[in-house]
Image (cartoon, rainbow, N blue to C red; front, side, top):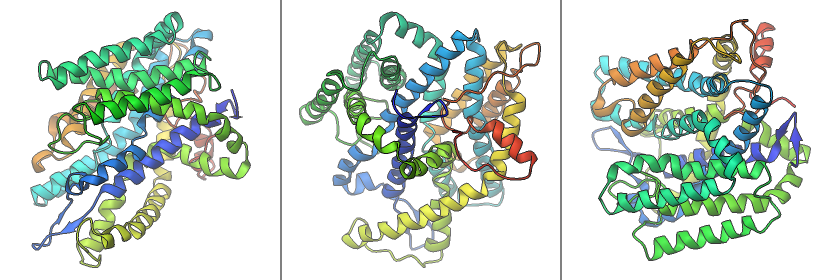
Length: 466
């Protein structure tokens, strides 16, 4: 399988870390702030204001890599769980808890800030903008949660039909998208979130099990076919080049994922497999792995909290008038992107360090609520997942302060959902399941070491075990 570290595939970890880093920098790059005459801050949409920047999304839309790597890791994790006689409920519960604990705490803290600001009379428009910024990345969470919950069924289909499963999913996605674009059945777009991203996830199964090998001709056909398909759909079809949502643009490639996004996901997955041998050799070098390893360990933290530095910098430099403000999209404005990214990177590093005590506490909670092989309250898991996914979908579409108001029902739904998943419990003997070294992020992989370190009063740092 290539470079391994403590049972982990280094290249899979690299893909996840690379995807997270590009998502963070992509969001920062396209976020531009403007101080209005009345002293408030607005955030013009760069992709709509400066249309040529939509081409930049071809480099920053790398979420297919995350789903590809996630499928590879989940396939291995579930295969081992089956071999050890563990249940689907226990396996899904552990993976759901690994995502929902940090996401729930993050949401709770943001919602608490929204409640305080709303009670203090903060301008509703400003509050809505901030609430949207803090939830802009949330679309990913319900999709990944659902794919994780469906993994036992998806992997069973994979074991029986192999590569035909993602092919069939892609075909259904194309039909659904045709109906969406034509305006006949707009609601089918929700299905495309699972189908399009599920294709990359299912390809991860095929990659891990050697059905799609890195040195075969299949990755070449995927890469070439995907890129050519995308070019045709954008050049001659109805789809825009932007792989990130642009307000008012129809059809969109991401809301819901379109046929163009499907071809891009296939092409990008093929390219990732083609580059695997070269990058695996690089990852064998200690210095290179030393850079990738901590990024993978902090991936969930980076993903959830990366827009907080934007708010901090906005308050420190824009509200005070200290930040220079050349014409939006001008050469001077682009030149200032360099210090902008550097300052945000420094602030985010500080945020990650400041969150370590919180992460140690989450590690303790995770250890104490970790579902066992045969959890007692399976109904709580599926009910909690349903409530959590519904709330996360609402936050992804509306933000944490839609129309400047506190979202009572979604907040309650997420709290109930996370609480139910935490209440699933261990098996009757109270025996915890063995640690899962291939979760969404390394948050779950250093949990046990975090608990031991917390007991000794020191932080383990955002690292994965060797």
